[in-house]
Length: 110
Length: 111
Image (cartoon, rainbow over all chains, first blue to last red; front, side, top):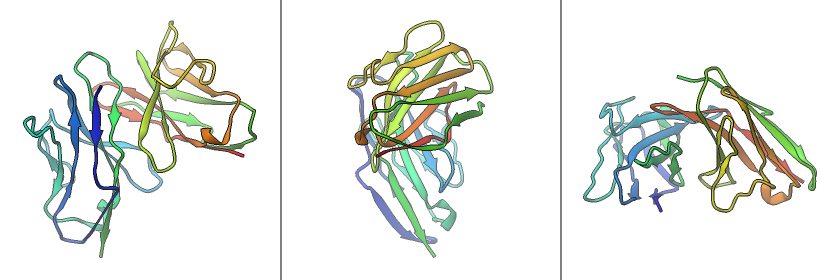
């Protein structure tokens, strides 16, 4: 069965510091990986997906199939980045539901 | 994109009662998904709802406890039946095309 692991429940950094939110997955096929973000009092929304290979709000994530990782990175954290971040995957079988990691709360302090 | 309206946004219910959560999408979608997020935990898929057929439930979830309706391509309901305090969670409706879209969630507290 597929599994997504986010080892950190909480990550606290100062404004301007680099950020890396870790995500590892286990799945024998070719998954599609996502990062979702939930800001305070807002609904869950897509931050980025590995297929598009784009940078959103300064965040990037590279899929490393050898290490089965999809870590989220940003070189300089901003206070408005404070939120809950979820790594998720969907399988390549045509099934479109997502499997989520447990989430990491990012706190960016001034 | 898709806009999902979910209601109620929150409720406090007595144990032994049932609550029906509604999910309305602004476009036609084949599959709708229901997730549960227990306090301090991640989202767990309850079931996948297809229009015109019975929902497909994940391991640990059964139709008697979480009956789902899917009368058309823009609407679904999830009922949490015979509630106990362990059912206190956030319940989320979702649809997906190239990305997943979520409702704002229903925060359920069972007392």
